[in-house]
Amino acid sequence: MIKPKIDKKTLKYGSASIILAVIFISLVFVVNLVVTALTEKFNLYVDLTEEQLYEISESSFDLLSDMGDEEVKFIFLTPLDELDNNNYTKNVKTLALEYEEKFDNITIEYVDMLKNPTAVTKYRKDYTLSSTTVIVESAKRFVAFDISECFVYSQDESGNYTYYAFNGEYRFTSALLRVTNENSPKAIFTINHGETVPTYFKSLLADAGFEVVHLDLSEGNIPSDAKLVVINDPQTDFTGLESEEKGKSEITKLSSYLENGGNAMIFVDPQTPVLKNLDELCALWGIGIEHGYSIADDQNSIAAFNSQALISRYDTADENLKKFHTSISQAENPIKTVSFYTVPLKILPLTDVSRRVGTILSSYATSYVPVSDTQNLYEGVMPLLVAGYREVYDPESNDYLRNYLIVGGSTYLAGDVFLHTYQNTYANSELIKSMVSEVTNEVMLLEISYKVFNDTTLTIDNYTSRKWLMALVFVLPALVLVASLAVFIKRRHL
Image 1 (spheres, rainbow, N blue to C red):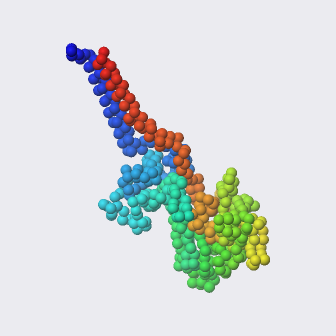
Image 2: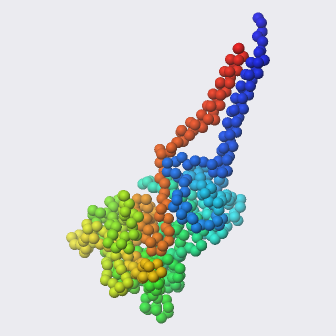
Image 3: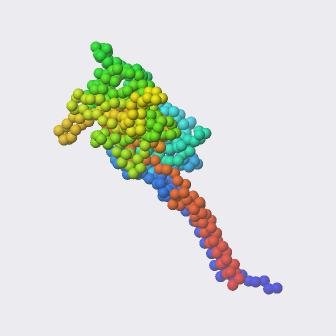
């Protein structure tokens, strides 16, 4: 049997085919590694989610337009590469990278608080830190929040939480405003009259850049730069004339503050006792309180609660007060505002011609105030949220300047239940933000909304993405290799 001879020309071309295939496959892997590394280093990604989770809205750019070039750091307490191990932490990291790319003054850092505890000592004075804490810091000040605060969640009957929306843009933009504002406006919550200070009302103010202060009026004066005073659920009266000689009359301090253009909000409920001095102050602004009674409505109320969870009407009679809820009431499908466990309010006659009074929210005509099983004290439309305001003409602006005393008949209007637990179901949170924004002329991040997750709305979903990855990294090189082998074998038998 004659041993076949190897054609040197065939061997030459066949070997070249295999070498080219190997080089091609190697190049694919190298390119893949390089692109991955560059993506991590330079944030080279395309947001393919329909919700554009990682896009920074024009509202944020407008709000941050005065931020300047002061250096701001986003400090993570988890190694940045480990944030990719969880979809939620990866969302937050990706958005942070987007801020870093879009704003030249923002940088991202990682601090190992276990190996370097002194690096976070100053933050511990104001915050409880954990591996999921994010710190936003400028030369002026710092704020911190937990990664979980970048998400909107629901809770089932078993107490299990489900994240259903991404609120990272709101959280990062509000933090940037807080640390870069030249002067933080003050919001005052009074204390030492049995008041409660709602956690999420405070958060709304802090997110907008307010410095929130607790103040005992018997011991201190209202700062001249305070934009808002909040009295929530008072149980004892504010001192009046009996303390005037000592210069400690709390009502005098409140009155002077309002007369000099300040703004105040008072929230009471059916259990609020008669507070003679505070009631008289409200009466001067045209607002009365029917202590000890609660409004009910069997038709226009939230069934999940009871007939005292009133669905509120957005009043439009007063143009200057209608603007408090226009962003809500004029929407295509207005969200309901709920006034739960509400004391009836009254509109009183005014003696000061510079003052006006009107309703912001009222009940429906089906509401009533029961005093027994068979008798009602009142029936029909009743004020739930009332504002007294003063108008002073300003020749420089050729317009009227207004300041407000707002009284709500429900402490739940601005309480944690509706500002947090049901913030995405009812409009209480948006109403409070809108009112604060109107009376203080401070931005309340009204236009930055959360982005609801939708697993089916990816333009390229994870499954398709993996298929393309397999095709490019494995299938295509394999086809090239098979084709090369085929050419090699064919040429051997030529």
